[in-house]
Length: 287
Length: 213
Image 1: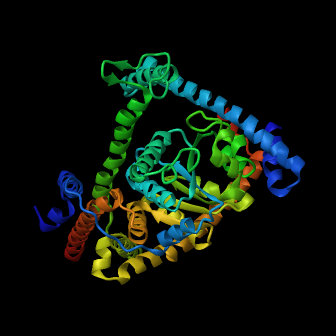
Image 2: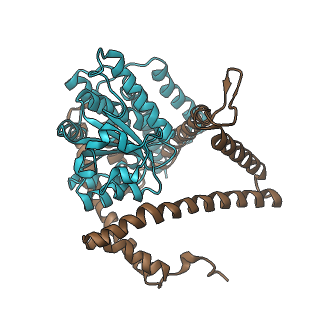
Image 3: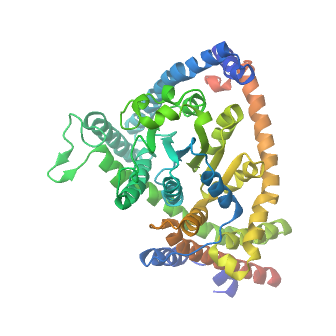
């Protein structure tokens, strides 16, 4: 076999095997890798941190099992930040599939806080500190309807409680009582929140998106339509970093733990692309 | 006529803030749209079942998988409808210590299956990038260089190579990427506007179907 063939035609099974090793080993032996926090994430952190006491944060959980590893750490980090600052949280989903994943994230962070709390005032209480509104199809109905009245759109919450009986919902009537909405999604929802809720009601919107869809959302950050942006696993790790360093919040940092896997996988991909191109240049020179 | 009326009704509330208009819009959205969405769901499920039943009858390509789809569809629908989310419904969803309520199925079947399918992508992407990413021309070389900078810049490793690398990667995303994306967005928006107007005014009717014969 010629050198060029060796360089340009590596068996895909070898590529798969090397990738498997570099991805799985750091996950089996996890270590937290610290990252430099970039401006888009810092903006989002500041936008959440400066939500006035009389306003709430809406988190739109729109991730599914496919994008869970990238987007769930964002949800966890934002919830930790909000609960630490005692920012009231409304959670919802525009699709049915993320409901279970949203429940998991809310339960996990609530349990983390309540395990440390000594009094009821210190605890995170459902209905007082956060409400899970659930799912209301089609997406346009809650996006536009909540600008007028949240309890008209969500007459009951995810657990079947009448929303008008929940203490938090007495205060949060519509978008005028909302400081920021963060959409965690792998698709179009962040754009819908801008197109409908922001344009019509002036809602401030932030987003957490998958790395693969990042490029199409940057224009909205540049125009200021997004108050901040988290991109992929790295964005989630940056938020974990800023929450940990600025607020001293401890807890498992799944995105930061996954960064070594991501780093080695990218380096392997770069190495293979370089090897393929070396073979390509040698072949072109011989022709 | 229906498309024209409801198309115009959808636009008006964004232009006229009068309470009368807003109330009608709110009523249509909170009532009519929800009912339509429920019918669309039934229509979608019916269509899915019909396609797969037809495939099984015709013994089309990979027809065996249609059995899997229909069986899982029926079983999960029965468990979901009668067993409740956490097994609190009228249907027993536990055999001894083995629960099979919809929540357990979701967490133990759908979540791992979905994650597995998506995880496979990284292997295909690695292989495809190795085979296709060649510096064949100036444009391809530029693309390759930009990809390397962004890939290294977004990794913590990039900061160790040079503290300027993450900033440069961010600049690529903020400036050249935004310039290109904005052009695409303008084009898409104008195209959507033109298509929407054509549909509302009845000029474009192919979406109704049945025009093939």
